Length: 191
Ligand SMILES: [Fe+2]
Ligand SMILES: [Fe+2]
Image 1 (tube, rainbow, N blue to C red):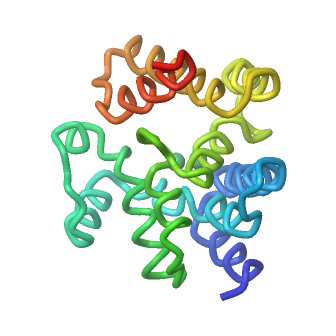
Image 2 (cartoon, rainbow, N blue to C red; image 1 turned 90 degrees about the horizontal axis):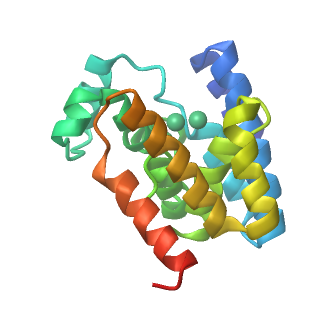
Image 3 (tube, protein in one colour; image 1 turned 180 degrees about the vertical axis):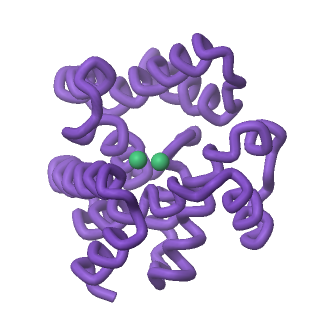
């Protein structure tokens, strides 16, 4: 399936707002890939498909996760929306015939990140946070960090914002978010 067919199919699946966000992520991921020396086509494809399962209901996410043999943690059970990234990677493989493990892994990690991400994983993780349709007050500090201090620092800033927001809302923090934060902060301070 070529990229325009994929884009068309995604437009039928997602709501107009989510599709707008998706196009923003795809374009931002493409631009970052060109700037940072990753494959722009892979970045764009990962962007187009990253939220393909985002509008699934909780029960549908849990069912799909079981079907695809995804390990479901207690936090996933309490906050099933966290599964949309891992389920999305399986949908990209099954329904869009994406076989490239780098693209699939970038989709699977885009919400929580992980320690030691590949360049493509880091690009999608950040593109999701800073695409042009994201609220200014949320995305601007991350954009600034990326511009002035680079990829690692921008990932740390994005984790800080997420962790603060999740904690303030009184939700459970996923240990992988903390792992991502610790890894990239450690890298930043040469731990
Ligand atoms: Fe997402
Ligand atoms: Fe997203």
